[in-house]
Image (cartoon, rainbow, N blue to C red):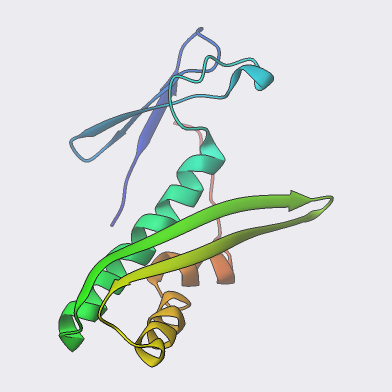
Length: 128
């Protein structure tokens, strides 16, 4: 399954992330004391949902042999007081009808990352 390692030194708040053979830099924006050297943590969360959504919908369209030429998912993390949510807007391109688009929106509600986020996830912390 998925694994990632994150490390931070003394540069506010640049974080080196390694996952598989990929390296990513995360940071906070200047409004939080960072230098905006990479996406912020909530941006990465939104990115994970977006990537899972479009990958799953691409796979679904291919399996159904629907003429989908592109799938776009815009994800917006919203915090209003104590309430938090992710707003997801889908754009599906190609010669697909409204019923097919509606079906793809239904599938989006059942992507792996969507289901994980909706049910919550236990986090276990240990010291090395």
